[in-house]
Image 1: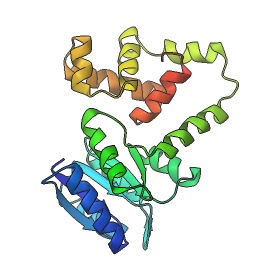
Image 2: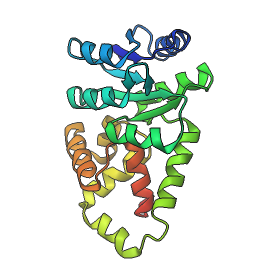
Image 3: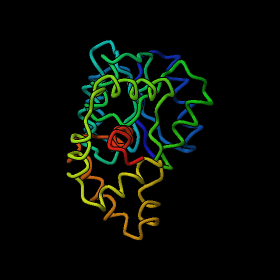
Amino acid sequence: MKTVLLLEDLPESQLLLCEVIQTAFPGARVRSESEVAGAMKIIKQFQFDLALIDLSLPDGDGTKVIEAMAARFPKCTIVVATIFDDDEHLFPALRAGAQGYLLKDQTTEQLVKQLRGIVEGHPPLSPSVARRLLEHFREEKPAATTTEVIADEADLTPREREVLVQLTRGISIADIGGVMNISRHTVNDHVKNIYRKLNISSRAEATLRAKGMGLV
């Protein structure tokens, strides 16, 4: 991670998250902004590999920045860093394109560990958020029938189902290619098809859908 956007309005939280980023990715260049307007302006001028975005800001909702960055930088890893763990903040952020969701009340060591996991393909999710996601999908689809599961599964080719299983193991795209003896570009194509067919946008959602389909 060479260039990082940090969107956080509280000075003490900015310092903490800068320390977390520099520890997780030594040498990374961090550009800090405290408002939505400033972030929207800077992403038109610079490209980013990683973004840590707060949701509640003085001039608006950080979800707007997530949407803009997801459209402008499809390879950028976008992670929410917030104090909110409720559905009203979590799911709009994920739908907007966030690939991770970290709670700032964790220790510096925990945050560093979760960010470092990005390199190995692990979605950066605070444990309580991961549990909330699992609970949400269990509540949302308590009566999912075998027919529904088969329909989901039937939409994917056998190769795509195999890639989906590998995604749930948290390994990188390159490592999936090595396991399946195919190029990383082919893996990327399969991942795009899986996300499109299952209407998902993150590895965390892929894991949940794979579990719901009985693949893992």
